[in-house]
Image 1 (tube, rainbow, N blue to C red):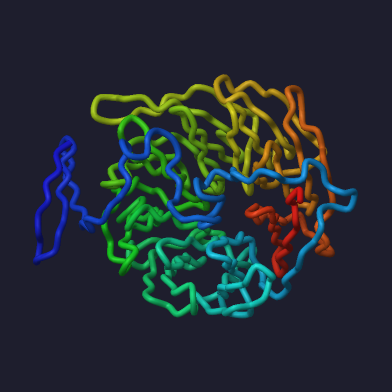
Image 2: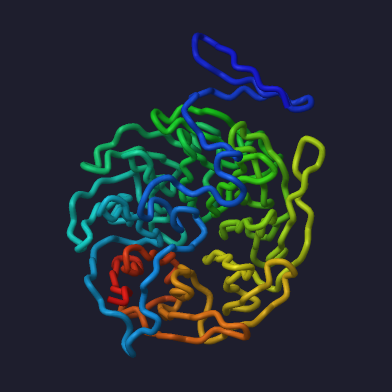
Length: 437
């Protein structure tokens, strides 16, 4: 690969030559962490708190300690509940003593700022609500260097001042890259990589793209895959084999791209009749795991050097078809739940794919791992504290989310920060104390 910095109309660009492919990438020349500086593995956000979907590494793992090892019979203490969020499945992010969360209220996508007591600081809009099939807000916001970023269900990406909610700039990603919205609407939770925001339009112009977070201008694009569309998953960022890599899913593939140029590194099959791939990939120890419903199920691929590129070589397949949740990898064990074929929880050996055990007391859902335990919300509203043992989970507490009738759609991923456990079901956000003292 050859890189050369050039100028076009007085603006900096980078020419990347890889084989017979030439890419032009608008340069920002701002500092971006390199694989050498970050080492191998997931690359964490430099921001404190819970600045993006699924935490600082987008892996559903919290570094919290000193948490309750068992819950009281009726669950941990409820600190507060906020009602009026509107419809939606987006999770909160929490930075600098503020909670940011979205919901569809009437005709608008509303972004709320709450304090840590659940009081409204401000609210604003980011375009229109999604009123199609499964109405409601989709994606969580992201925080970076004193700015909020959010992508709505129609592809409108907005940059906001977190102090006031005032919009700084906005672009429509679908319009820019000539992409069509997908059946159940754009749901991508934005990844901020240094000076760039990553989006997956999945169009005939770009499979993936990086935008300058200061003004929304295009920095690089990944060449399209013929016939491919966006799907519903959100990307991860990691370093491996001396590269910084972004991995995500489109309608028919799992893929990886070079985070600095957008060059496509690999694709793997993830095709099903609905074009639905919604579970974020999982990375660990030089391997990546993708899971799709109805067809390919869960598959682990080992990422190996292949000339100047990377090959993804299939290692094992798991009998699981995750849709609304996402896997959590801890100490060589992958925890995840199925959707249609096996709608319960599993623990898989990361090296071999062997099913270590299954747990059928909870249905499909999402979780946060913290202090040696999984904090789970299943789609029926059951909330549980599960401790992984050598031969199964031990339930250390369980209660039902007090939300009235739950229509098997409690799909918002939970958040755990500073001894507080946040759960969302459509119109309501609950905050529970799970700190030991």
